[in-house]
Length: 95
Image (cartoon, rainbow, N blue to C red; front, side, top):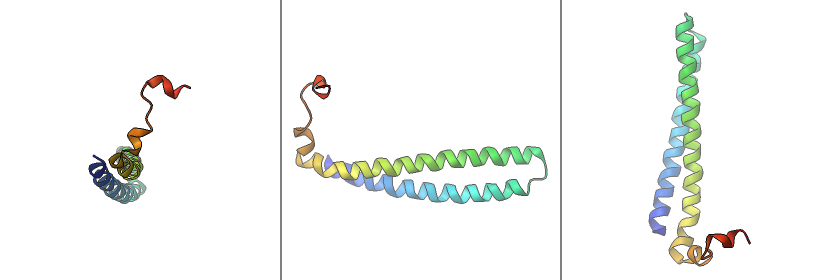
């Protein structure tokens, strides 16, 4: 399980970085299109696309963070250290 998490984590990191990169390029393209818009309808459409690029870029950044967590937790999960430190009852967290 830990090995799978480690490889999946690296996949999340790579896909997240690519998502951030390509969404930033699309944002720049839409920013240029918005600056050269001739009608209000074009301007509104380009700003909506820019908002979507920003949202998608942040989702890619969250995938990078999740991937780093999976890469860091994978080895401790496969060695059993992670399970050994988990309390037996949920109430043990409150103590």
